[in-house]
Length: 407
Length: 185
Image (tube, rainbow over all chains, first blue to last red):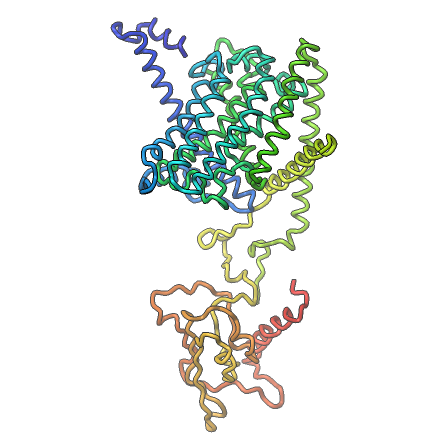
C-alpha cells in the first residue's frame, strides 16, 4: 500500500506542493472508502440473502425469491427500506450513547479490514502486529453492544448487553490462546508473514502442521462464533427470551448497522481462520510477470476459503443447532475450550522443540483423517436423504406432491 | 467428573452435531414443500382440487337431496343458517322458500354437516371467499320455492339424483369412519 503511494509520488502523479503526509492520508481515506463501500457493505448485505436462502432450504421452504432473479436483490430492498424508516430514540434512553453505540460496533467491525489481507499485494496495511490488532479492534464491538444495552434503558436490552459482554470477554481467551500456536510457529504477528509460511496445498497449511494446531482451529472457530454472537451462542439477542436483545429499541439505519456488523463479522471470522490455518491466498503458481491475474487468483482463493469457513459453515450450524443456555455457554468456554487451548499451546511449543522441521507423516495422516471423516459425513448425508425418500409418503405436507383429486 | 466422562462429553458433542449437520445438509438436496399460492402454481393445477374431500371450506347445499329437517339450523352454534319450510299437500311434502347461510358469520366448525342425514349441506374445498360487501357473503340457495327431498318407501332412487345422493352419503360416511378410530390414511 505504502509502496504503491510512493510509486505514485515518484512518477509525479501528485502535484509537487502537496506534503507527503497529506498524500498518505488521502490515499488511506480513498482506499478505506473503496474497501468499506465496495467490499464490506455488499458482502454483509449479500450474506443476508445467502443466509435466508440457505435457511429456507434447510427448513423445506424456498426463501426470498421475488425481488430480482431468485430474490437476489432482496438485500438491497431491505437496506433501502431500513434507511428510509424513522430513526426513533426512546424518551427514556440516554440519547448520546444510544446514538453512538451502532457506530462503535461498526467501527470495531470495519476496523479489522485495515489488517485483513485480500491477496499478496492487496492489503490496506500489513501491520507487524496484524493479528494482535485484529483481535484488539474486534473487542471494540463489545463496548458498543454494552453501550447499546445500557443506553436503551430497557431490561431486554440491558440483559442482552450484559450477556454479550460476558460472552465476548470469556471467549476471547480461548480464541487468543488458539492464535498463539500459529504465532509460535511463524514467529511473527503479521498476517502476510503467517500466510507466506504456508503452502497452497492442504497438507502445507498450518491446520495440518501437527495435531495441536488441528485442534486449535476448531477451538478458534467455536470461540469466534461465540464472539460473533452466532447461534448456538446468540444469547445476547435471543429472540424467544429478549425480543432482540441489545438491538430491541433500535430502528431504521441504526438497527441496520448492528445487523450489518453481525453479518459482516462472519466474513472477518472466516478471513482470520483462513489466514491463520487454511493457507490464506496461496496459489500453486508464481505468476511473477502477470501481477493482475495473480492478484485476481489470490483474491478468489482467499475469498472462497474465507466465505466457506466464515459464512456458509456458521449459517449451516445456525440452522442446525438450538441455542444453548448461559451456564452451558460458560461451562463450554471455561471447562472445555480454555483447557484445550492451553494443551494446544503447550503441545505446539513442545512439538517445535522435539521436531523443529515438522513431521511430514503426521501432516499426511491428518489430511487423510479429514478426508475419511468427510467421506463418512457424506455417507451419513446420503443415509438421511434416502431415509427421507422412504418416509416421504407418510410425511408429505405438500398437497401438490401427491395431487389427490377428491372426486 | 473423571477424564473418561470429560472426553466422552466432547465425543458426544462432536458426533451429535455432525449428525445434525448431516440432516440439514440432506435438506439442501431435497425439494422444498412450499406451494407458491396463488401466482406460481404448477401449470393447470388449482389448489382447491388438491385439498382433501372433507376440507372445511365454503358451505354448500345440494337442494336436490335436502330433506328440510332443519337439523343443520338447530346445530349451528352461531345461527348463521336460516331455513323456512312449510307443509304443502298439493305440492307433495315440505316446500322450502328460504335456505340462507351467512358465510360472513360462519366459523367453519362443521357442526351443521354432521347431523345432516343425506349429506346435503357440506363443506367444499373452495376457500377463496373474499368479496366487497357483507351482504354478498349471504348465500341464498333457494331461488324459487322447491319441494324437499323425500326417500321413496320402495328404496329406489331417481337416477337423476343418484350421483348427488351418493356423494352426500360418502361425505357423511367418511366422517363416521374416521370417528370410529379406523385407519384414515
